[in-house]
Image 1 (cartoon, rainbow, N blue to C red):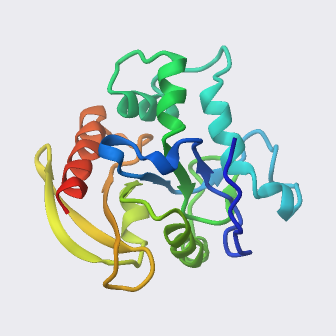
Image 2: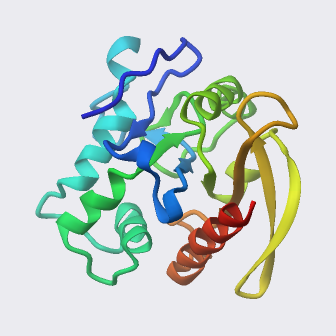
Length: 218
């Protein structure tokens, strides 16, 4: 069951919030995974009303938790399943258990197109600013994992507090405030998008673990 939040009109796509999100994920730290945007390859949402489109993120995650017969473990959601459960072949029960302890939202607040290769414009990125600030304020995550370097580069929020070495690269860690700029907030960093050729399952798992360790020490 989804917790009911009083989202403003800025949040066009309501986030997925697991049943046990408030209890936290690793070390009882609340985790928000921030994807980029929605596409509508099956043309199920693009012609629906604004009111109906609000549920697209929630319904999409529900589909990930109830995979059809054509489910491929190397797809976007399969990679997230493996990272969250830390298993190569997680059971559906394990997957559901992890997703019900986290939240998931997309930054861009418009359906970008019918295919994942559709290019995002400045308007698309700007659409997410107010929504993301509201999501932070309402969900109050301790950890934010941003999927995609372009996603990370277009988020104008917070300030740098640390560096994390993932593989052979250094990644900045930012403080994303919940309310006031210098107040409490989340440790945040990024990984290459799971659909990118630069994606690594090991990098994704390492980033989740290292973010959780830093949040535990703060």
